[in-house]
Amino acid sequence: MPFVYIDQNVLGFQLDGKINFSGISGLRFVYSKVHFAEIRRSQNPESYLRALRDIGATLLELQMDNFKFTGSATLVEEGFPEEHYSRYMESIGEVNFDEGIFDPFQVWVNGGGNADLLRSLPNRFLAQLQTLNEYLPEDLRLCKEHISDVMFSDTLEQMIADGNDVENKRAALGGMKGRFGSIKGENQILQIWKIIKPFLPSCSNLTSDHFFGFEPIPGIENEPVSIYLGIVRCCAVLDILGFKAEKKSRRIEKIANVRSDAAHIGMAAFCQALLSSDRRLTERAKAIYQYKGIGTVPLILEDAS
Image 1 (tube, one colour):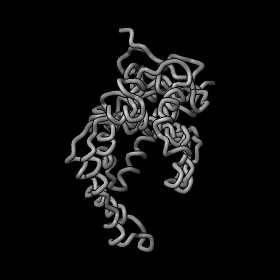
Image 2 (cartoon, one colour; image 1 turned 180 degrees about the vertical axis):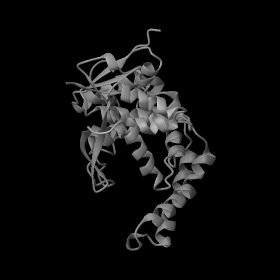
Image 3 (cartoon, one colour; image 1 turned 135 degrees about the vertical axis):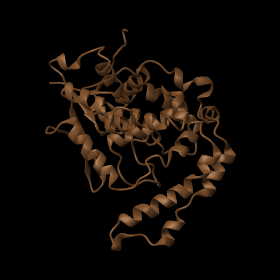
């Protein structure tokens, strides 16, 4: 039976009565904790959880080893969405963690945000490290001097001085006048790479997988990159390049939704299909899946009303 990963917006069709997925046989609908993050931000979490239960959706969970993604995922066969969501809320409530701590940075590199929010990042990051440090066993805690050393104000000030005109960044990589956004046809990610590569003469050893986030950058990263994390990183690069990107990627209040979109594409890579009503998301997913040889088929659900 094919596993179909449903985007969050698809649940809206079920809630609005535009389609009844519970009456569809021969498919197994799948969701993930990415849905829980979005449901948590919604005004009516109970209705979304009920919709997941009504369509018989099964939770897909990434496998981790020593706090690192292994590159595999499994279905959680037991339990209802409400039970899984309750455990999810309990787990994130155990530690006081600021999920949006790097939002100002991500929005800035995408061409939005403001300098004051970016300047606040070091202090917020330092406060977060101090908070997390308190949760560690005594013998694993960092000394206060080491925590205080983790500052990057100079780097951020240089970023602010350079400005955040994303069109200039794209032009420097050969993507002037919306060139990356107009890519069509087959192997779109490779088409983009062929444009960019000549503009990186000092990075002769850099491959497309390095650039788009699927392989660790030589000399900077050492750990292998899981396919899920690689897809999320690739989406962040594509936002900067302007390929199937949305303006909301430049808005601080919307950047969490942008990350959720990337995570949905990553989670769906473990299924036979991805179902969404977001055309840009499905088109980006198709390009990424084709580039990495992933068999997931993106499907668009049109609103006929």
